[in-house]
Image 1 (tube, rainbow, N blue to C red):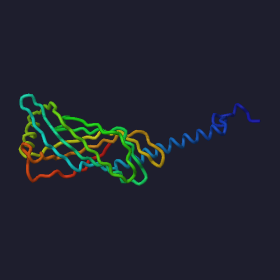
Image 2: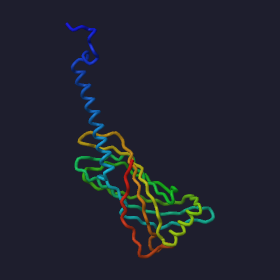
Image 3: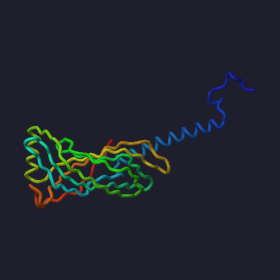
Image 4: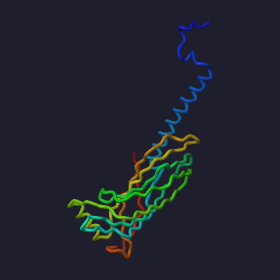
Length: 206
């Protein structure tokens, strides 16, 4: 008969308890591995974000009250090139900046992206916002106004989970930024003929 004084916590566990404990330890290990794999996947550009088309029909600044009126439509694409994973996008918001000043944000519905799939999204930004330029910012705005091509930044605020086999990782928050040069559409004030928007890849980070 075993001496009770020599009994360790592990030895005192019944075998079903050991099985359950081993299962959860294995599950935790695999979840950590899957999350690390998902993180590597994002930073290695296996998921590609790009703005493949943009239309800017209004971008006017009122000199008296510094209100910037804008009307911008962006067409986005997300490519999941992996054949072994799916992606749950639980939160997705596109935010537009000009000269580091936030203009507006558009929330997108949550969705699930299948393996080896390209998802297309459309975001429309319209309204007005107060902008405060210093002398350098005012000079850059005047340069853009003369050329009819505006340097606009887009940030995608994302919360997602990766499905590897049938296991879903914990939430991830990749940072996606797109640096665009968007011309005013023909027929708009200060539009420039001969300059077309070029499809622009976005940078992914954490």
